Picture 1 (cartoon, each protein chain N blue to C red):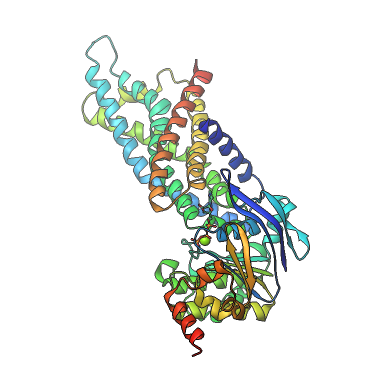
Picture 2 (cartoon, chains in turn purple, red; picture 1 turned 90 degrees about the horizontal axis):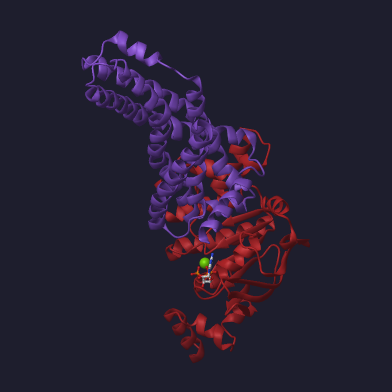
Length: 245
Length: 254
Ligand SMILES: Nc1ncnc2c1ncn2[C@@H]1O[C@H](COP(=O)(O)OP(=O)(O)OP(=O)(O)O)[C@@H](O)[C@H]1O
Ligand SMILES: [Mg+2]
């Protein structure tokens, strides 16, 4: 029952977000700031994680390739598939639910408990639009983050596989081009757009409707992370079922 | 002028406001006093439209605010200023940006015009030269004054203050009370001020409404509040030691 109530409240919030718009010049600055906070601020960790995940996938695959009948280039193929299909879009998004998500929940939540949101409303500002809309727009650039993650993941795989002496460079490159299905990229980016929206709005919901004080802001961030991950995973399942099977 | 008629508000089946009737006059500081938990903040939030009243009407100079749509309410809110219990400054913005915020959102002024107005009000609250500080870098009393500056920068017709001097030393509290009072008279604002501080009552209590058990139990002036026989009012007023002594002195004819 409370879940239904929350879901209803979430959609009402979205309706408010796309309601009366904040003044354009103000909105532009807010969006730029959010891009800086949410996207630019995450590039470092995403790059780091992606590179090493790619590397580990390559090593794991290489170590399990004992059968001489299977070509060595499979290392590259496996790395490409796993990075593009799941590791970059899904795994990185879960990390982002922790990083960006708790940032959004705690920043909106602390504005709620210190009455800053009430202050916006009293001034006649649509606080949902003012606070959440710029985050959604900023997250439209999230696919670039995932593209970088894919690239670095594969670069990591290449480094580990070639430098580790499992395959040579040519074998890796040819494996990378094996049975490439462009639709897999489309699928990955459709997912990414949906994840971007979830990453912006689910944590925002948890911050916007929280009650209590500073302590509860911390709790809300944790709950927000759990729920954002759950929604991401369910969405991932649904999209995969719908588009790939 | 703000007219409140038969205002009811409850939460989860428990009624907090049980039919309030009152008129807040223009150009005056209208005080609402009452014990902690008596519903003062709820009353104020109903007037602002942050809470939806269960029953009753609220009129702003004859405009039926309580039956307005969200959009119409937003429109009217641009004529209101609010000073929150905790200041509610935007902590990601400097003092200057905080004060400029309503101008940036609702006027088409040039940056230089806005800056001039911001400096004018900052000067008015004795904070000139602090524009570039962050809210976290200034004291609680200064934050309150910044909040006042932000509330009046766009020349509101209605000003709401929720315990503007809670947590401040008596001297600063008096400064803030008097500042609000002066601004109210200077700009002919309808000001509603919540307090449970008897010093404020002594200082600026020209119109006082006493809230108890969800009803306005008493109304009058500061002169009257010290003479009334109404037991609930005297209980509240003389719960403070200081005022008990004052009362004793009065009775002794000192
Ligand atoms: N959002 C809310 N949901 C449920 N109950 C609430 C809510 N806000 C206030 N109340 C209840 O309404 C009553 C009055 O609260 P209110 O904040 O108006 O008191 P107050 O007179 O402002 O007290 P104080 O002087 O301590 O600020 C309290 O019992 C409080 O628990
Ligand atoms: Mg209160």
